[in-house]
Image (cartoon, rainbow, N blue to C red; front, side, top):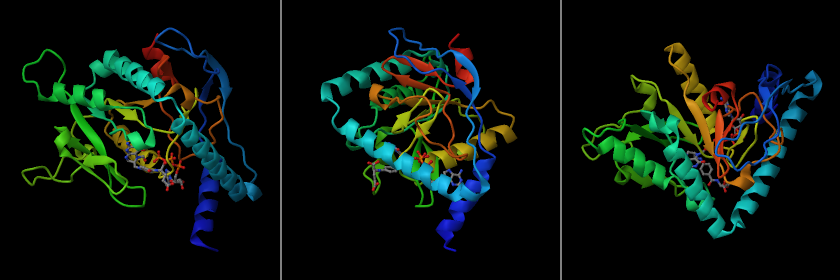
Length: 286
Ligand SMILES: Nc1nc2c(c(=O)[nH]1)N(C=O)[C@@H](CNc1ccc(C(=O)N[C@@H](CCC(=O)O)C(=O)O)cc1)CN2
Ligand SMILES: Nc1ncnc2c1ncn2[C@@H]1O[C@H](COP(=O)(O)OP(=O)(O)OP(=O)(O)O)[C@@H](O)[C@H]1O
């Protein structure tokens, strides 16, 4: 049996111990800034027959790929004026949010225009401004950004203090150089002595259950799993996981196929506002 096949079977077996998650009702775009899906007692359960586990996993992989293709096309044909308006609305919403203002350690992403990702330039500049200003009344912030280490889904989050600390990787995404201008290794968030409050996450599609479809590298899912384990081990509060999404990236509840490896987000910020997708985020928006 090929190693790929063995991996599929192992993953399908693990999927039997799948994640269950409180389901919230279908998202309806509202005019208000905070969108609150009503809680529902239903649970999302991936059921599998032992014999068709690998087939089921292959089906999930295919469904994910089909949705990725659809989303990439939709994003490419998005009107640039609409995109720019949505970029501003999303970023302004984040900048004004209490959970952003109070955050001290943040992991975010450097948006890539070619991938049509929600722009993070204003958010990153604001974080770095707060990091740099001495004696300013606002909370000092530390910013960590992703750096791809290899093709095995390994990613680190390294601390930067200026946008000049970034260099383009092979995918043309800006990421922190491993060492700073003095030749010192940058701080890795996994080695930080304080917890991360907030993750600002990219993705291709999201739903009101907090399901997130990434670009298929598994980088974020692997990283978030490791970081959440670290936080539990240290008795730290779990970070708030917030994804940024254009309106068209929000799909029907359950339309994103998942396996047990997919880490759900706590909330989505779209041009319609804050969409809590976990009990912790729902409580915050009450
Ligand atoms: N801005 C940003 N940084 C990030 C991520 C991300 O999604 N966005 N990542 C999140 O994992 C990691 C990098 N992973 C990536 C995975 C795929 C592609 C990419 O260019 N995908 C193309 C398709 C490539 C192909 O299929 O051949 C695409 O999606 O159009 C980019 C980054 C870490 N840094
Ligand atoms: N915690 C994990 N342990 C082992 N493999 C994992 C883990 N998380 C993801 N993977 C593997 O990575 C591959 C890509 O996963 P998936 O399609 O969910 O990525 P994605 O969510 O689109 O990407 P990303 O997480 O980078 O945004 C899959 O083969 C998946 O099984």
